[in-house]
Image (cartoon, rainbow, N blue to C red; front, side):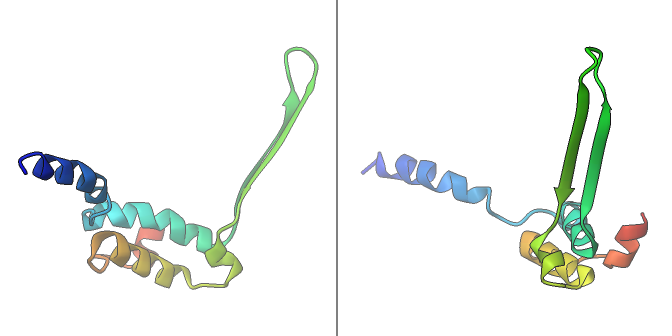
Length: 98
């Protein structure tokens, strides 16, 4: 029976990582999700390498929140509440600016 307790603690330890995080940390993490709900982000690279070969690349990020037309402020609020268990301490409009 003594082995059961340590085994239970080992089995439950991954679940501890799923717990709430501090609200300020959640706000920072959720701000990017909300920004992606506003519009897609992208980056294009075009150039010539030192060996004379052309270099080209394209990176585009589109969130499902953008595709579904969700309000970025609501995305932010729901994300912070989900991650921290608390409501945001400041609105997304303030986070956006700063």
